[in-house]
Length: 346
Image (cartoon, rainbow, N blue to C red; front, top):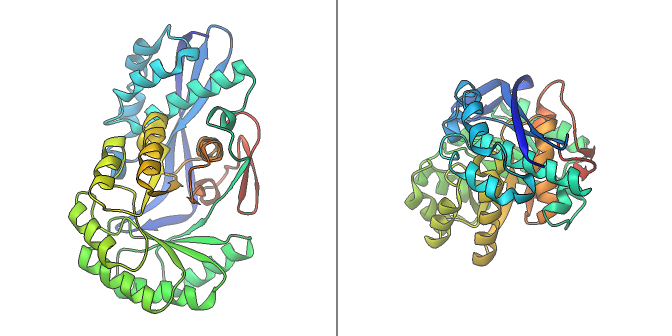
């Protein structure tokens, strides 16, 4: 079970509808599929979904790392997977998503060898998770139509993107809340507000009794004082996303009482830091959600198996494969909002 080769392959997908978040619109996503070849003939697979905005990554830079990473891990046994995880931790500062893809490929190969499924490797606590579905920033009419379609598909949690226009954001969320009373809302500002704006926004939604279960990353990445202020003043649960990539980020947020929730994304943290963040959050009684970048169904399976296996997450935002063209579930089955683990994770 020793590693003999690594192969990287770019894969480009277009969005069914451009994804509009605070100060950014994406029309397509480029992911990297990783194949990890072993001397036993088993090939482990993983997927990286690079993000320059969150991780500072670029696809050409990650592709260029193949030879260097192979030199580091060649000859190592996937049965001693934590040693390989340690090697990949050294690459995580500028290549977090690639760290995840290789760590997951190691787990995939390990599971094939031992005859278990990845979710069992991660603990086997659940066999399915229930995801939300995302609504981009748009006009009120577009928002209502999008939410109506999502509700008709059987989703109970809707994630709304906000953060560009405070008053319009309030109008959109309140209008959705008034019209669709049987759903829960996660509202994601993607760093778009100041702390003062975020407190005003949260207060407006609370007074209108909007069913908001989480206000996600309301302030800029490095404004931890602002994040703490929002948590202290807002009548809504406040979560961190972009400002927590590593276990050290999570520890700092917990130590300073900045959040009620942490959004774990495997593409930010890799498996090693994601597992550590879970334990930090459990120790501090902080709740968790799991999110995604722009993964295909090939990559979303990594998070489905991780989330089902650990059973650690209150909310699951694993919908990118539904927003992209020509991609579907791989390694899991989807029945409405429920994602059931099946075969190998990728």
